[in-house]
Image 1 (spheres, rainbow, N blue to C red):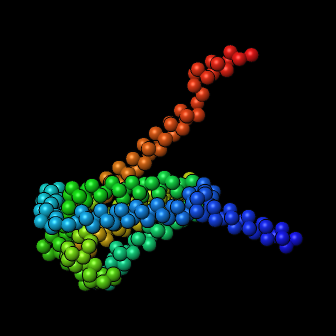
Image 2 (tube, helix red, strand yellow):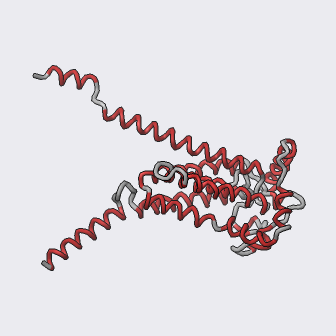
Image 3 (cartoon, rainbow, N blue to C red):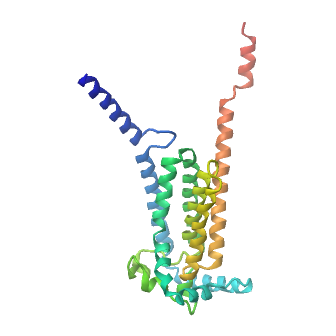
Length: 279
């Protein structure tokens, strides 16, 4: 009896190791393979993002001035007023900084939640996140942009004095290894949009009313990036455009893959004719 019990435990452990390393459980990809793939995407993004910020300070400032001119013409230049509103309400400064800095925790939490609780939705929301992360890199290379806190006179640099990650994260030191000139589009808003989308996509069928609540997160982030002087209105618009393009790419790829699977599963005309002639 003990031997049989030990045998079942051994088989269970073997199946668990196989699922974690290379298999699928409940329609989900293998966790360790999934983590490795996502870490590779993060590493690629971090390296290319940092490289895009080298020797572009002059171009980034010029682009920021051009963007400011466009916003004035469109009557969208609200960044200075929004920033002054925050400085007039100092009790809200630290909550805004925490909201701005700790959104990575929300991204990870949403990704894990969809993976564990909504396996049927995971592949699409994961690919949307990956595609958006990769699609933004050419934009950062082609259009370096200084944030308002660097390029707009009168803006109070909230992060310079209140950054919870340390003052080094908020400085203009281009030798820090970080890209300080990637304001367009705002990926704080872009990835927050993804969080809203992932929550909505997972809940839309079973809890249609609750599915609307995740969209409040990107709305809050849009406000925060404006009042802290980190992004322009058109940066937010750029994030929405990038997000929409990412969904379109993933949807188009999914339809193409489905057509290929359907075509592969259909018997060819010649095969059907041969089968009909057989007695």
